Image (cartoon, rainbow, N blue to C red; front, side):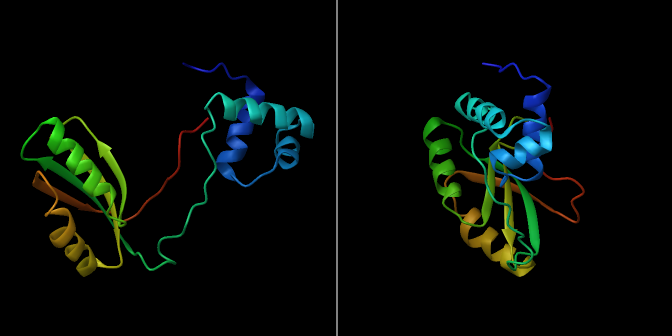
Length: 153
């Protein structure tokens, strides 16, 4: 179900996209609403599912993860069991930050973080290539990132 948003709702969402840690008073100041009005709108956006939660963004490089690789994974066998087994197994690998089931040349797109290229090679050989149903894998190493984030409002 699509939720009808007005300009104030969109302003609240933009404020949260810039800083998810704002409280209702700070959001109200940022968008020109009183604290109670901002709180009511935030509550409605949360209850309707537009705001599904607030999270923190970690700096992977400061944590020692200097390499990001996007993998295209083609499964050798397609069937409900192999897909579920693959999804369960790949989701358990901590270095895999994102698992997307896609339509196209590959069945899945994975975002993998690693400390360096040799660490990535270890993850690829010992963890990803041994997953159930994995056939072809294509790696694309991230060189730079100009824009990151969720849906823009």
